[in-house]
Length: 363
Image (tube, rainbow, N blue to C red; front, side, top):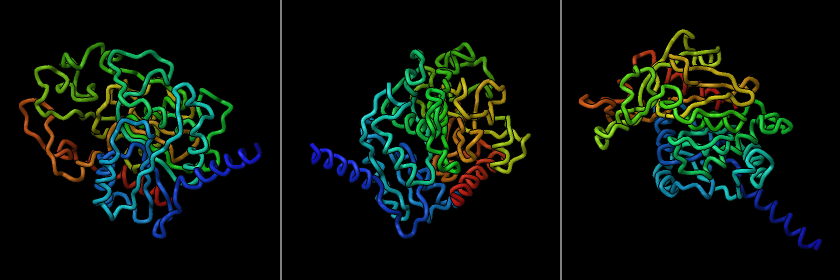
C-alpha cells in the first residue's frame, strides 16, 4: 500500500511538473490565451505586426480543454507558419463536471500551476454559456454548442477571482493582485457568471420585446447589438456581416484612465452579441454601457487593477489588416472595418491595445 501511494504521488508530481516548460531564453513572462482558435491567432499576429503589442519577450500559451469541440489542429497548422511568434498550444485533460465548477475540483491543481507560472490570461469571444452554470433555465434564443469550453473557463476564472458561490474561498489573485485577467465579449460574460453574476440571455426579447428575425426595424442603430439583417429570412446567405456598430458611454474613471481618453467621449465600437451581463459578479463594477444605458459594455474589478472585461470587440483583426470589406446592410457597398469608425473612435481602439501592451510589459 505504501508503495502504491508513493507511486501515485510521484505520478501526480510528474504530471504537474510537465504541464508547462521553462520559459524560453528570449522570454521573461508568459501570457495564457484561452480558446486559441485560428481567429485568435490572427488577432495576435495583426496586433503584433501593427506594433500595438510587443510580444518579443513574452511566451504565449494557448490553453483549451480536451473536450472542447473546436479542432485545434487548425490553430497549430497556422502557428507552424508563424515561426516569429513564441506561441504554443496546451491541452488540459482534467475531468470537469457542471455541478463542481465553483469549488475545489479535479482541475484545481492545474489552475494553480497555470496561475503560478504565468503573468496573465485573456479570454475571447464565442457561443452562449449553459444557463445552468449560473442557475437559470434555458431561454429559447440560447444556443449552447461547446459546454466544456465554458466549464473550463468558468472554473478557472472562479479559481482566479473567487465568487459569491463560495465566499469562504480565497482566490488565487490574493497572492498576485497585479495578475492580468482580461475578457472580450463571451470572455467578459464568463468572468461575470464565474464570480456569481447572471446574464440577460437574449437582448432583443428581454430588453426590447422583439425578435431579430423580425428585423427590429422599430429600433434605432444604438439599440442593435448584432446585425439583425443577417437574421431576417429575406437577407440570409447574402454575405452580410454578423456584427454591428454603436456607441458606448463611460460610467466610471477606469476605462478613460486606462486608454487616456476623454471621459465624455462616446466611442463607436463593434458589437456582436445577443446576451449581456445582468447581475454583476463579485468584486466587479460597471465601466461602460450602451448609449441608452440598457446594456453593460465594460466592467472592471474593484480590488485587482488588471482585471477587466469589455462586451464589444476591440480585437477585430480587420481594424488593422484591411484585407476584407464588410457589408452590414442590404443594398450598400462594403467598406474596410476601420472605415465605419470616426477618427476618435479608431484612436480609442489603438489606445486600448497600447494600454494592454503597457500592462503586459509591466507584469
